Image (cartoon, rainbow, N blue to C red; front, side, top):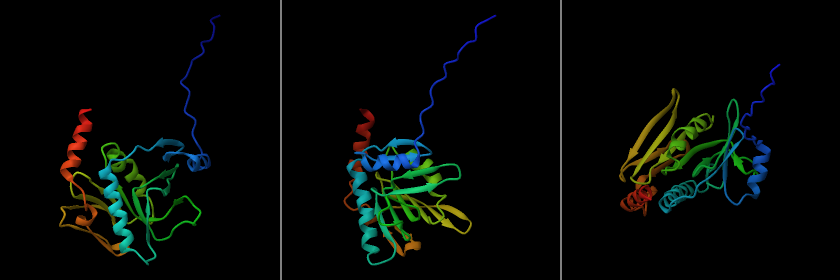
Length: 207
């Protein structure tokens, strides 16, 4: 009679519940995003990324002053309830017209979301996050903002579904009709040295 063989299977990572994630995130020193029970630490950002993100929020804040829709910075999460799981992301910026309660740490109903692209996040922003963001019923515009040139790709909701629109050059103006704003790319990229940004990223590639 042969002895039974015991198969050693690799242990599966423990999935974290939404409640566990939110509780841990309140105490965490660094931000983490959450996708269906798995938690991912967020990487730091280059100065050019932060400048563009700040310009985006500053312009929106000025244009929306005194209006119902208001911008939120990257310290506020957005919750996405997918058919099979829940996600939490920290967008670089978003505009919300129906915010959650003042003591909540996330919003469910953004109208506009902007992500400033970097080498480390480009694939996730263009694929995984886009997939999630475009399921949000209230979302009208998802902006992918480049840092090495004046170019913004917008996924804009139409009655037939989302369409892709590209705005390029400092002379271009990006309309966000759902919140009554027109965003000049010259203001979005104010103070950005594109050549320096390209050199810095090329230097990182050589390291």
